[in-house]
Amino acid sequence: MNFRNRFFSVLPAFFILLLLSAELAWGRGAYSYRFPDPKASLDAKADTVIGLMGEYVTHKKDTLLDIARDNNLGFNELECLYPDIDPWIPPEGTRLLIPTQWILPETAKFGLVINIAEMRLFFFNKSIQMVRTYPIGIGDEGWFSPLGTFYVAQKRKNPAWHIPESLQEKYQMKIMPAGPDNPLGDYWLGLSIPGYGIHGTNFPWAIGRLVTHGCIRLYPEDIERLFAAVPLKTPVEMIYEPVKIGFKQGRIFAEVHPDIYSRIPDLTAYGHGKVQKHKWADRIDLDLFTQVLQEAKGIPVDITRN
Image (tube, rainbow, N blue to C red; front, side, top):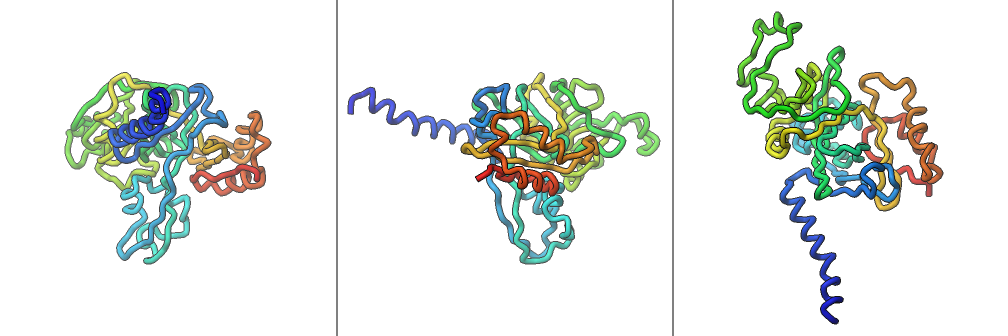
């Protein structure tokens, strides 16, 4: 074998090692992805399904909330799959599907992409085509989290909470100092939209719920890692997309979440409208896709017509 052939024969191994090194550097919860065209994540040549499904057999004293946190999931992600299981006392010996697989949201902006509808944040590193993803808590009824494109304008450790005027009577103060009672937790990423940010929590069981006054809340261990990795001016795109379409090894997947803010009159019609304009639409099993839209279990399902 001449030098040229030997050189190109080791290139695949070199890039595999490079990819593994990048994943290790980014830590747990980091995944590789591929958008052939950054402006077209709904390209059938893309690989936009990340992660792998897991399994867990419940033990005595388990709760769904603890199981969710142990697997870096929000409570909503297990609640959608198991609405009939008591979250505080799941039957011992129950085999659960752990939904640690996701379709990446459509984006051309990268940075931080927050899908309010699925209660999940995605942190894209475009230069190495790696992404981290974290579960979140979002704004409650009447305090809906905002949509739009912003950027990280502030970074603060041990933040004080400047309480909205409408809540000052409830808390009997204007500013709550850092400490165990502060709902912002230990880290604050303030956004360019005044009054809103991404922060930790003093109540981890709130992740995967509608609990905030519009901010984005993360597990303490997740916000610590995100805070260290995100520089100022990082773009933040906040979207509301309960229906996501993705691709893996040439097959088509759909991931559907409940319309938690009741913004879409007909989720089934919305989902079909989302795909019908694409050239690969005739490869979809429409009956299966309709079933996925109606069940809205929040997990990627292969809807490719065989």
